[in-house]
Amino acid sequence: MSDFDLIVSGGTIATASDTFQSDIGITNGRIVALAEGLNGAKATINAAGKMVLPGGVEAHCHIEQESAAGIMTADDYRSGSISAAFGGNTTIIPFAAQHRGQSLRDVVKEYHARAAPKSVIDYAFHLIISDPTDQVLGQELPALIMEGYTSFKVYMTYELLKIDDRQMLDVLSVARKHGAMTMVHAENNDVIDWLAARLLEAGNTAPKFHAMSHARIAESEASSRAIQLARLVDTPILIVHVSTEEAATAILSARNKGLKIFGETCPQYLFLTADDLDRDGMDGAKFCCSPPPRDANDQEAIWRGLKNDTFQVFSSDHAPYRFDDTGKLNAGPNPTFKKIANGVPGIELRLPLLFSEGVGKGQITINEFIALTSTNAAKIYGLHPRKGTIAVGSDADIAIWDTKREVTVTHDMLHDNMDYTPYEGMQLTGWPEIVINGGRVIVEDGDLQVSPGSGRFLERKPGHAAAVPSGNLPLELDPNRNFGADIL
Ligand code: URP
Ligand code: ZN
Ligand code: ZN
Image (cartoon, rainbow, N blue to C red; front, side):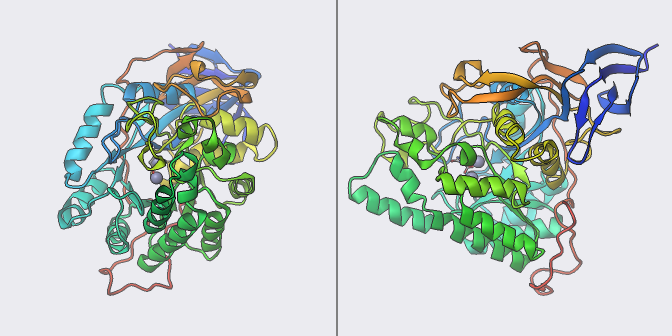
């Protein structure tokens, strides 16, 4: 009789804290032994000479989601999860997006129907709250948090999604009371709209003006405001897709004061700039996302932030819209910058990009890489220690990397349903070759080894994001105290 279902032998394991030689014994989808010289398994994978890392936890991606304008992302749960798997990920947390007038409960049901038959890897859902009615705040949201949907995103911009400051305080209060995490898209809608109106009036319609209208100030003002609102309610928030030095500084300064403010950034803010939006013809539309890519100075600041704990999470913000009339050019072949679908793809390249340019070029350590791409997201979103690490008792979610493999990025090699990648032509070193999720080998020899629908929904427990003091808000609120639990 075999002791294990699977052994991964001879590799160098790295986690967010350690790097060591060990075999991994896996039974019933979980890691049950870490030791050298394991034997007695139904199957063995020889990982000698390779790095054995926790599978990526992709905590910000838009899959099979309609935008507020009604445009469906190019990736459904089949192509989106397969692309994630080939990029070394074993968990995705996409959004179940409420549009105004919709019941949150119905939205969640609908996203389950989308994901369950198609996802090849494990998944949870963040909610998007765009309509915080009394029914949503008083009943649906608290009940859903208790049922395992313990994080949600709110928008300070986008006409059809944004909530105002008062609504944000209401949502934050629910998050605090029930121990959930609020993710904030922090851009000042009025600043963007005011600038956009003036640009359009002057006939400036090209994609590059998208970047001008989403001014840095719009992001830094909204980030600072969100931090103050979270401080008032005394609950943690995570500011997503940070693009500028100023917003990064606001987050770090809040953290240095002991506030539970978390930060996320994405590949587009390290590897793209606003100049990409000025490519020939409409090509700049391929790079339109919000906030937009900035410049070399901001890129440097974002790299610094990965090192100095401004950012805990590095996500793709995969928002795939094809360069055709189903996506970017939905409003016609020559839309004004205001009518271009916002978002860039990146779910498959997130880990290889950061590994190659971050770890490979000495900007971050392998352990920091794992913290940023897997462990911290698992902790912040209530999935740790089941996800995000290699430890006895954790799910066997593992990516075996050939750290020397050289790859020139082309869109053809990717598994998403897009028709371009913003990172075309980049030369990367290091690639995830074998990916294991819940003990199942899902990617090997360049092929998908499992069927759509084999990924599992991950129910989460509330309370990871905030330790909630007794008492009712807002009367017993003390704005000078911070009750955020020690998540990280
Ligand atoms: O431009 C972006 N990031 N589109 C996706 C939606 C969002 O705000 O994350
Ligand atoms: Zn956003
Ligand atoms: Zn997003």
